[in-house]
Picture 1 (cartoon, one colour):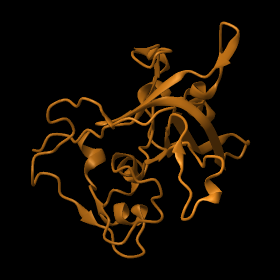
Picture 2: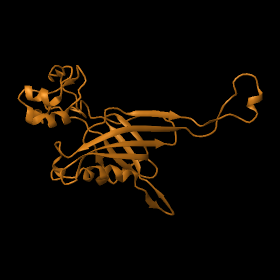
Picture 3: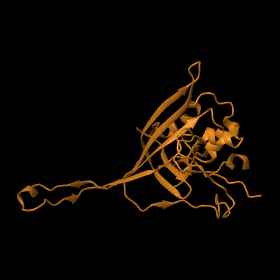
Picture 4: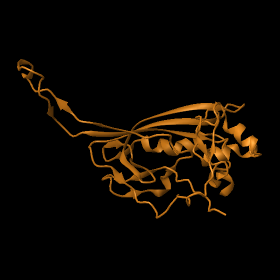
Length: 234
């Protein structure tokens, strides 16, 4: 029988002021669902020197400061989906999202207020910076008005342009043996709930969605490959 497939989860971690060492591990914020994509953008500070407009041809531009690197991503949280043991009794999604919001909350450092330095790490991807902005959308409510589902759009930045940082991975971590992970193709117009029901797994569709990192189980991509047994191998 094949070994269970462990899905690597992204995580936010606090760094010291010099962006060198991870601190306050109790503040680590693992995501519930991994992001669908990560957007990394780079920008240089350029300036056209005075008088350049008098010259023939395009004006020269000069580099006048450190560049910036930014990371943008969206995370989803849902208390109606399967939760880790420590959050089993959570009935308000903000109890989950507040761990992420911690990283944009300024704390007093001497005479100034600064947000914590943060590291976003997911497998071999690593980004260190400050949380520049955070937008939270509460999207699903219980009958008594409790928010149950939320999306969070994060923008992190660092005041420099550097080579990509590669986090260390455990040897073979998360990689199933070749040929031991059967996948099912999603037909056009199908939903994960319908696919799970057709295989007698209708009660487990939420666990299957989480194990496959499916953010919207009602809108699958035609031909999308899904491990319908992932939740059963935990």
